[in-house]
Length: 252
Image (cartoon, rainbow, N blue to C red; front, side, top):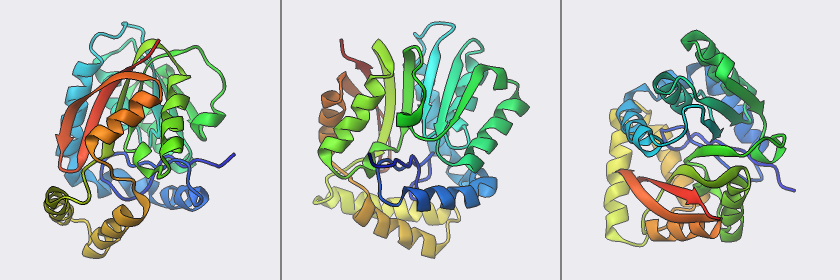
């Protein structure tokens, strides 16, 4: 069984990586960056905050004591946002980088919701069997699974952890890479990174990574993959540049 890494230093919002041969290398990189990670991406906060604002609406109908699975939790930004607004919710944070998970745990402690969290250092496959969750998040994860069947398998793994009808909120970079639209969006996206004070060398590394390591597909193809993984009617509820986000319900 291949190891999984839930994060990569390419996109600006809780970036993740899954089922890659260099998972140990990615984990080590995030261990090194954890202490300054939030500060580094601070100027991209408007993108993240808009996603979280809509995420609150997507999850608004969940029970008052809902249990959420957060895959590739990183420093815990979406958990922090949701915990402040839904004081009865409990969260399971899955994150392979121990240093990133330490930041997540510290944030939960400082903001007063640590008792509502379970922290799992590792990958989704290694999470102990728990009662089915009411909802899950997986932001910028599946795009790094290049093989279609493995990408479908990632969503199947999530579905297996959810109760029937539970909501998944997921996001990925998505576009038709052969189109003029993608060329224009990529140019704009790179300019945004520069405006956010990401060094030019780092921006060029991201451009190369998008071409080499990221399975950027047209949005309708991503929706078909989510559906094949066991979810009904993936609905696009957010777009910012190349990032698209969907909500869907576990089938059955």
